[in-house]
Image (cartoon, rainbow, N blue to C red; front, side, top):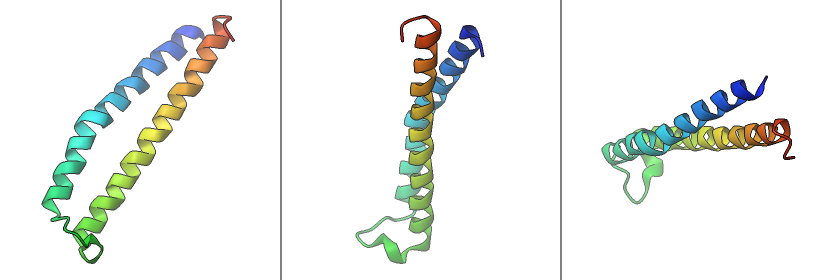
Length: 82
């Protein structure tokens, strides 16, 4: 990939992370409230599903941030800074 393609991909990934941290986080919060997350949510099947979705959301967010870091390193190398 050339520098321009890497920078475009980086911008798209940053936008995805921003959306996940705003809209995605709000959606998970709303689902947690709707699932009646009490003190002991382990007995609540709806709450279990929400927690699984939250875990997957978090893992995806971390993966995106790691990919952003890798792209930034590649861009730095192409620009001659690394």
